[in-house]
Image 1 (cartoon, rainbow, N blue to C red):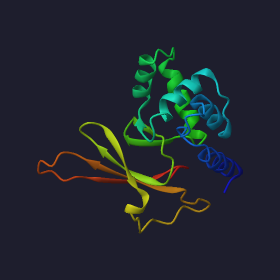
Image 2: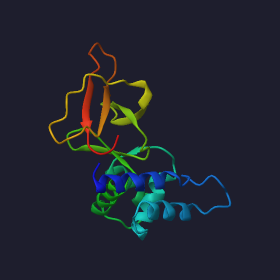
Image 3: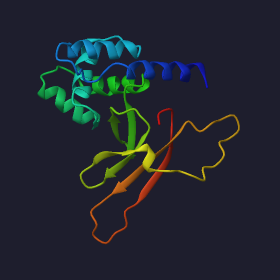
Image 4: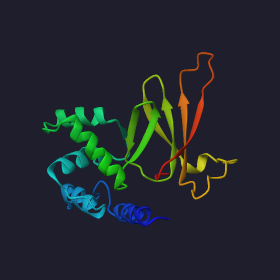
Length: 177
Protein backbone atom coordinates (compact mmCIF):
# COMPACT_ATOMS: atom_id res chain seq x y z
CA UNK A 1 0.00 0.00 0.00
CA UNK A 2 1.40 3.40 -0.91
CA UNK A 3 2.02 6.09 1.69
CA UNK A 4 -0.70 8.24 0.04
CA UNK A 5 -3.27 5.41 0.12
CA UNK A 6 -2.37 4.69 3.76
CA UNK A 7 -2.84 8.35 4.69
CA UNK A 8 -6.21 8.47 2.86
CA UNK A 9 -7.38 5.35 4.70
CA UNK A 10 -6.29 6.85 8.06
CA UNK A 11 -8.29 10.03 7.32
CA UNK A 12 -11.38 8.01 6.35
CA UNK A 13 -11.15 5.92 9.53
CA UNK A 14 -10.74 9.06 11.66
CA UNK A 15 -13.72 10.71 9.94
CA UNK A 16 -15.90 7.64 10.59
CA UNK A 17 -15.52 8.10 14.35
CA UNK A 18 -17.32 11.43 14.30
CA UNK A 19 -21.09 10.89 14.64
CA UNK A 20 -23.01 12.07 11.58
CA UNK A 21 -25.44 13.75 11.89
CA UNK A 22 -25.10 14.74 15.53
CA UNK A 23 -27.29 12.52 17.73
CA UNK A 24 -27.25 14.63 20.89
CA UNK A 25 -29.51 17.67 20.95
CA UNK A 26 -26.97 19.46 23.10
CA UNK A 27 -24.26 19.21 20.40
CA UNK A 28 -23.95 21.75 17.68
CA UNK A 29 -24.43 20.26 14.18
CA UNK A 30 -22.15 22.87 12.67
CA UNK A 31 -19.39 21.74 15.04
CA UNK A 32 -19.91 18.19 13.77
CA UNK A 33 -19.40 19.33 10.17
CA UNK A 34 -16.29 21.28 11.14
CA UNK A 35 -14.85 18.34 13.12
CA UNK A 36 -15.51 15.91 10.28
CA UNK A 37 -13.78 18.16 7.74
CA UNK A 38 -10.76 18.67 10.01
CA UNK A 39 -10.52 14.93 10.74
CA UNK A 40 -10.39 14.35 6.98
CA UNK A 41 -7.58 16.92 6.62
CA UNK A 42 -9.74 19.64 5.05
CA UNK A 43 -9.90 23.26 6.15
CA UNK A 44 -13.52 24.12 7.08
CA UNK A 45 -14.12 27.00 4.65
CA UNK A 46 -17.55 28.61 4.37
CA UNK A 47 -18.27 26.74 1.12
CA UNK A 48 -17.18 23.36 2.51
CA UNK A 49 -19.20 23.92 5.67
CA UNK A 50 -22.34 24.83 3.71
CA UNK A 51 -22.03 21.89 1.32
CA UNK A 52 -21.04 19.52 4.13
CA UNK A 53 -24.18 20.45 6.03
CA UNK A 54 -26.38 19.99 2.94
CA UNK A 55 -24.75 16.64 2.15
CA UNK A 56 -24.55 14.97 5.53
CA UNK A 57 -27.43 16.38 7.60
CA UNK A 58 -29.95 14.12 5.84
CA UNK A 59 -28.16 10.80 6.45
CA UNK A 60 -26.94 8.41 3.75
CA UNK A 61 -27.84 9.63 0.27
CA UNK A 62 -26.75 9.80 -3.36
CA UNK A 63 -26.54 13.20 -5.04
CA UNK A 64 -25.21 14.56 -8.29
CA UNK A 65 -23.33 17.86 -8.39
CA UNK A 66 -26.33 19.43 -10.09
CA UNK A 67 -28.71 18.19 -7.37
CA UNK A 68 -26.46 19.59 -4.64
CA UNK A 69 -26.11 22.89 -6.51
CA UNK A 70 -29.91 23.20 -6.66
CA UNK A 71 -30.13 22.48 -2.92
CA UNK A 72 -27.53 25.17 -2.25
CA UNK A 73 -29.49 27.69 -4.32
CA UNK A 74 -32.69 26.86 -2.41
CA UNK A 75 -30.75 27.31 0.85
CA UNK A 76 -29.58 30.72 -0.48
CA UNK A 77 -25.92 29.69 -0.46
CA UNK A 78 -24.01 31.83 -3.01
CA UNK A 79 -21.98 29.05 -4.68
CA UNK A 80 -21.11 28.36 -8.29
CA UNK A 81 -21.58 24.95 -9.89
CA UNK A 82 -17.78 24.81 -10.32
CA UNK A 83 -17.35 25.25 -6.55
CA UNK A 84 -19.79 22.39 -5.95
CA UNK A 85 -17.87 20.12 -8.35
CA UNK A 86 -14.52 21.05 -6.78
CA UNK A 87 -15.80 20.51 -3.24
CA UNK A 88 -17.34 17.12 -4.11
CA UNK A 89 -14.01 16.07 -5.64
CA UNK A 90 -12.14 17.22 -2.50
CA UNK A 91 -14.59 15.41 -0.21
CA UNK A 92 -14.18 12.24 -2.31
CA UNK A 93 -10.38 12.43 -2.23
CA UNK A 94 -10.52 12.93 1.55
CA UNK A 95 -12.69 9.83 2.00
CA UNK A 96 -15.87 11.67 3.04
CA UNK A 97 -17.74 10.69 -0.12
CA UNK A 98 -17.65 7.90 -2.64
CA UNK A 99 -18.08 8.51 -6.37
CA UNK A 100 -20.54 6.26 -8.19
CA UNK A 101 -20.22 6.54 -11.98
CA UNK A 102 -23.38 5.09 -13.49
CA UNK A 103 -23.12 5.92 -17.19
CA UNK A 104 -20.84 8.14 -19.21
CA UNK A 105 -20.47 11.45 -17.43
CA UNK A 106 -23.35 10.74 -14.99
CA UNK A 107 -21.81 10.53 -11.51
CA UNK A 108 -23.40 10.43 -8.09
CA UNK A 109 -21.70 11.09 -4.78
CA UNK A 110 -22.53 8.69 -1.96
CA UNK A 111 -22.33 9.77 1.68
CA UNK A 112 -22.10 6.09 2.69
CA UNK A 113 -18.42 5.23 2.29
CA UNK A 114 -18.68 1.69 3.65
CA UNK A 115 -18.23 -1.32 1.34
CA UNK A 116 -21.43 -1.80 -0.63
CA UNK A 117 -22.85 -1.89 -4.16
CA UNK A 118 -25.65 -0.08 -5.99
CA UNK A 119 -28.85 -0.39 -7.95
CA UNK A 120 -29.20 2.25 -10.66
CA UNK A 121 -32.68 2.90 -12.01
CA UNK A 122 -32.16 3.99 -15.62
CA UNK A 123 -35.63 5.48 -15.91
CA UNK A 124 -35.68 7.88 -12.97
CA UNK A 125 -31.88 8.05 -12.58
CA UNK A 126 -31.88 7.10 -8.89
CA UNK A 127 -29.23 5.16 -7.02
CA UNK A 128 -29.99 2.78 -4.13
CA UNK A 129 -27.56 0.92 -1.87
CA UNK A 130 -27.07 -2.85 -1.93
CA UNK A 131 -25.32 -4.17 1.20
CA UNK A 132 -21.83 -5.45 0.38
CA UNK A 133 -22.62 -8.85 1.89
CA UNK A 134 -25.43 -9.46 -0.62
CA UNK A 135 -23.12 -9.74 -3.66
CA UNK A 136 -20.26 -12.20 -4.03
CA UNK A 137 -17.82 -11.64 -6.88
CA UNK A 138 -15.66 -14.52 -8.05
CA UNK A 139 -13.44 -15.22 -11.02
CA UNK A 140 -11.59 -11.91 -11.03
CA UNK A 141 -8.58 -11.81 -13.35
CA UNK A 142 -5.05 -11.47 -12.03
CA UNK A 143 -4.01 -7.85 -11.71
CA UNK A 144 -1.23 -6.74 -14.10
CA UNK A 145 2.32 -7.01 -12.79
CA UNK A 146 3.05 -4.42 -10.12
CA UNK A 147 -0.66 -3.74 -9.52
CA UNK A 148 -3.23 -4.94 -6.99
CA UNK A 149 -7.02 -4.82 -7.21
CA UNK A 150 -8.04 -2.02 -4.86
CA UNK A 151 -11.75 -2.78 -4.90
CA UNK A 152 -14.61 -4.17 -6.93
CA UNK A 153 -17.82 -2.27 -7.31
CA UNK A 154 -21.03 -3.73 -8.75
CA UNK A 155 -23.75 -1.54 -10.25
CA UNK A 156 -26.98 -3.35 -11.07
CA UNK A 157 -28.96 -1.44 -13.69
CA UNK A 158 -32.73 -1.53 -13.42
CA UNK A 159 -35.63 -0.62 -15.69
CA UNK A 160 -39.35 -1.37 -15.59
CA UNK A 161 -40.23 -4.98 -16.30
CA UNK A 162 -41.74 -4.59 -19.77
CA UNK A 163 -40.37 -7.81 -21.21
CA UNK A 164 -36.78 -6.60 -21.57
CA UNK A 165 -33.90 -8.05 -19.57
CA UNK A 166 -32.48 -6.18 -16.63
CA UNK A 167 -28.72 -5.76 -17.16
CA UNK A 168 -25.95 -5.96 -14.63
CA UNK A 169 -22.74 -3.98 -14.91
CA UNK A 170 -19.56 -4.80 -12.98
CA UNK A 171 -16.57 -2.56 -12.89
CA UNK A 172 -13.30 -2.54 -11.03
CA UNK A 173 -13.18 0.73 -9.15
CA UNK A 174 -10.34 2.93 -8.03
CA UNK A 175 -9.46 3.51 -4.40
CA UNK A 176 -12.92 3.38 -2.82
CA UNK A 177 -14.88 0.19 -2.24
